[in-house]
Image 1 (cartoon, rainbow, N blue to C red):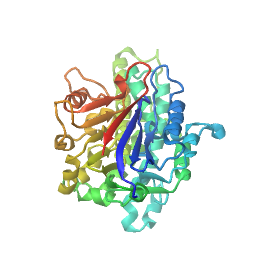
Image 2 (cartoon, rainbow, N blue to C red):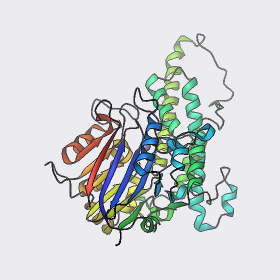
Image 3 (cartoon, rainbow, N blue to C red):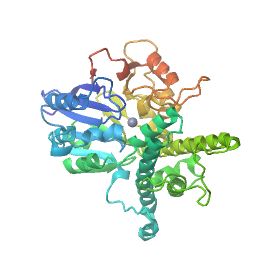
Length: 433
Ligand SMILES: [Zn+2]
């Protein structure tokens, strides 16, 4: 008898600001296969210090000690911190490695075979077809350095407004390197570094499952997107790295002087007529830094793996934190839009931020309905008041975005980790296939 999927069960874990979803497929021969989509958090909910270990142990119990695959959508801490094996190899990452996954799926930008060179010249020796990829990977490396500088500066610049300092630190920390987690992912199983159209081995490991990789696009693929044709993507990444190097703090956290020859007056010695200007200048620097870390945060989000799985007559969409630029290539293809229209379960992109659920995608979902019953299910892992800013006029960048949450609640069956009842830290979604 051949194995045929009968039911999918998705466990949404409440990890605060982060993602962790256990995707389990039950088969008609009483076997099951399990996929883990991300395992990270930058801020666990109040009073849940051991949450990540509890989740790791729950994954062990639920999978009976065997994972088929891990999908690490992108390198942000809120998606991979749980893969850190910890000192003494007793951390959550060691627990997950003990589940001996057959495969780890990551975006192509994580491929260690891509040559990187933060100083530039070595890129000239990279064969032309790979040069865009190498430039992108290099720029991503440079971003970690900029993030480190921003975190350091947020800690020692008391004259930045408190809200700005908080956000600078939060986004900056999310972009730190997570080296131990990255290493563990690389070593726990063979890795696939995927991009739009990649034929993944997941299909061989999961009988009866059709897998489409919809993102991230390669540098060449995104160059094909008509509305992006104006800018050379490789150059775009270069520019970002250069802007960060020029305007951000120097690597290692040392602060470069904007005007190296100026004579600094220290409070309280700033002449009274200059104090307003000094205050404005400092605030500007703070705003500029925040702008920079937001740019690099977006860039890293856009490396997210977007997976769409078709199982029986159901379709499941897991896009990590992909934003518009990542989505643009897949959404430019009519045949992909047609599959996306049939999605039954949607993992909400980037914790409910507005630009991670492109309008074309959302309005294309045919199973949206404001009548409860057999309609679209959306799964959102989030924690408010951590990312972005609400505005009184409604034009804010807050995560989760209120207007999107309202639509999700109205037009889909929304599972929201923020509204779990007291004492509940996961929720199961069952889908017959
Ligand atoms: Zn995230």
